[in-house]
Amino acid sequence: MNSGLLKQLGNIDQLAGVRLERIEGGNGGGSRLIHVWNAAGLSFSIQPDKCLDLYDCSFQGVNLAFHSKNGLSANSRFLPEASEFFHYWSGGMLATCGLGNAGGADTGDPLDPQPIHGRIGYAAADALSMDTFWDGEDYVLSVSGRMWESRLYGRTLELHRQIRTALFSTEIEITDTVTNLTDAPEPVFLLYHFNFGYPLLDAESRFFGPRADTIEYSSVGDPSYCSMHAPVDGAAQQTFLHRPLHSGETRTGLFHPKRNIAAYLRYDTQLLPYLVEWKCLKSHDYVLAVEPANCPANNRQTDLGTQSVPILGAYESLRYTVTLGVASGAEAASLYENSR
Image (spheres, rainbow, N blue to C red):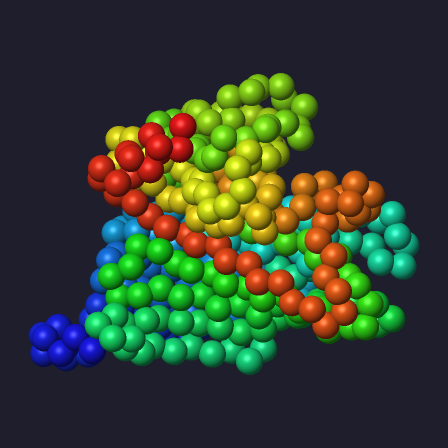
């Protein structure tokens, strides 16, 4: 415990804290948000009614996250059909996709139709826990809970999530444990849909990541997946799939050279071997999404057909860790240059 620091404070929440809040009014009325902030200048909100996903996120007053024009929706159990997804998706810093599907809607199995990006992102957290505690000289901020996706005569997949940061940390660590709670093997789809928005994203910004084999899912045909531009009315969205060439820890994200700030993701490509990039520079839908995934994220039947989805045995678990971090100054420039 840092007693010298504490002597200067009336309450530690002058510098860092975790607070459960509730939205009143509008489409988000009744939604709960867990506000987390620290002395490094990180401030973010967690949605306990939507898979403990991240909504707001800023660093030292600079917004990092994209919010869709739909804004917050209070209905955590709304499961959109393909066309309805676009009317309700909120965006936010992180939207988790899975566990039965990632990518496009899939109606190939009439007994088990899959909405766009699956159902887990609409699951509310059970066993919700918030904690703050001293770990030696560091003050830890922690939120955890469990969600699950289940079907009568079918799968039961549990997702336990823990989100941690610390007093002076510039990183948010997200640790997910997925467990198959049934007596048969089950494929597990998981995609971390991180959404960067203005002012981190503008014409000066540059995407960076590991060296990879890259293909374009969209039909636009513009290969410039690293460079950005100002919003263009009616601009077509693009989606790229990157396959990192090395196995192990990697970093990918968005760098703004004039602001000298970079937001990055740190994760293990052995567990998340695919990286989807959604580049949408259309006016009002201005977003760069960086999405580590354990599958190519076409849709359930397509990915299963290519045997590119992890199969979790009966009662087995898989653990994934993705860290969202922010670098500034020389550190941000170095992070960008070393990734090229």
